[in-house]
Length: 286
Image (cartoon, rainbow, N blue to C red):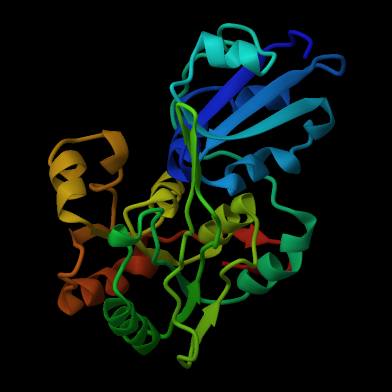
């Protein structure tokens, strides 16, 4: 490959979303001149991470290289893929909201969602032991419906891929679903990664595990009720910032996984409309 400047996005979907908000790697792509090119290297456990660049207005000027998450990763590995020793330094940014570009196939679903009054349910994490138990999700869904909300369940099934040294590891990611419950619509596998973030923007609030779509909801400053595994709570939520940066946002709640508190969730639902601004989208308003 020729040596055009490149930027890297490394880790799971949450890491990629974090990197896009806290660095200029993603936002700098919109500033490319008509004759400039940029190589985008995505080393992710989640193949959907590369979709954030697929429908970007500058997509014709982007050379997207998608690789499984690879460890170790450094100059030697970059050279093996025809890259330079170091990525292009774009600098850091304040994590203001970002414009993403969904797939054209997402448009009808997003237009329909814009006309609904709904809570987004994001029940699964990349590791199944961090996913919300179905019985807790069913209780939360019943409470959301009692407050006049529809429940939309989001997620993607995929095969996480890792390369550690010379060993390739492929697993299966399974989504928690609530199919068959009245007032609940499954949109699992219906939207692209940027389309899913756009769907969260249209939601009144988010009920989620502490994973990628929790971070996306916080970056959108949506009312968010998060269920957190004990070890993640001790690692992230007992200090400020980091991957728990949204824990003190208005109407942001977090409880330990497996200890769902219906009273706390009702308090959360009671404040959703107070802090949720309306946004417009072709076909409707939310």
